[in-house]
Each structure stands twice: as C-alpha cells, then as structure tokens.
Image 1: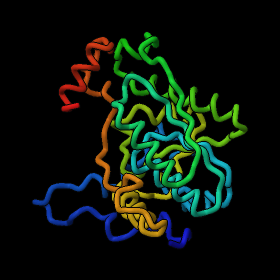
Image 2: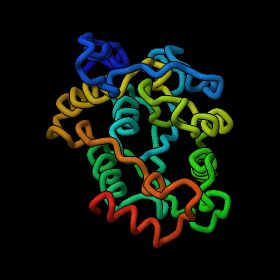
Image 3: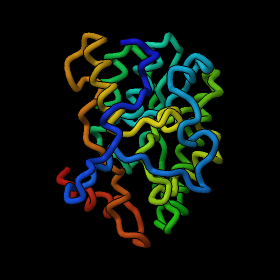
Length: 244
C-alpha cells in the first residue's frame, strides 16, 4: 500500500444521510474545542507528511486499532518507532496480550511500563476530572521511558471521531506535548479500521492481526461511578460487569 494514501478521507467519513438511521459515531468527525492542543487539531497535516517530517517516534500504545495503525504506518514509511504500553490495574489482561501480538507481527519493539495507578490518590478518588489526571500520569510515564531510549516525540492514537467534549484527557495530551497524527490527518475511527485492514493485507498478515476489527474498550475505571473510590474491589466489579 502506498504510504501517500494513508490518511486520505473516503466514503466512510460521511454518516448516513437518512434521518431515521442510527448515527455511525465511528464515521463522525468530532469538532475541536478550546481544550484541543496544536498536536490534536483537526486537519493539521496528512499522516504521511508527518511521518516524513518526524521519522523517529515513541508511540503510546494501548493494543487497540488506532495506535496499531500508527505503528504499521511508521513501519511502512521507514520510520523508527518504539511502542510504550503503560500497564496498570485499570486495564484487562487482554490489552497487553493484544499489544504483544501487534508488535510481534510488525517486528517493532515494545516497552511495558508497570505503573501503580492505585497508589495515585488524586486519580483513585475518582473525581470528575479523573480521566485528565490519569492521562497526565500515563503520559508522564511514557515520556520518562521514551526519553531514556532517546526519543523526544511522543504520539498517540487519538482519532478524529474522539470527542473532546466527552474526553477530559484531551487537556492532558495538550499539556504533555503529545501529538495525535491520526486526528491531525482528519482520520475517523472508520478510516482507521479501513486503512489498517488494507495494511494487514499489504504486510501479508491474516485479517485482524493488527486489531483492525477490535471493538473500542474503555478502561475499567470508566465503569466505576464518579465519586466512588477506585480500588481493587471496584475494578473487579467493573470487570464482572463487562463479562471479564
């Protein structure tokens, strides 16, 4: 697949025109707000141009399809990339397994950072800005580990369908100087899945190897009611609620 075609918006971008049809939120572009930093602003730069300009990247990796696309696109463009996954009690075990499967398939090194988020009182009190506090904590860990490896540019998989009005973590991304190349390229979640499926085929991988069809899965802390303490017991209950 030609790297110049990555990030090009296609027919999947427009939600269904029929008013009676449900909205496909994976195909919707969520507008910028005042909390969106320069690294996340819509339509700032095509993905292929960014990869040519920044050929050395530390990818904050979740094991999902968005950050998997960043790794695959970096490999295709000949960029040097390393994946960094912050492992906390907020994530189910399958996220790490998925991350290892992707990095092994692409031949890209993965650094797993063990972080004790349950020791962070400000996060585990579960205030209204818990997501912001957690993102700030996680990206601090990524930047520290990446700096030790000589990386100065941190990117993440935030895409154009991610809504800043519902994601307080956008503020943390801006403060940490993280760049979100997929959002800056205007790529919706639907675009990401389509392009990643094409890259799986291009690399000779079985469909789904790079998580192109993986459903979105919020962290377990999302399922603990706001204001209720986040601890091992509440996270276990959240996991049971999700059938894990």
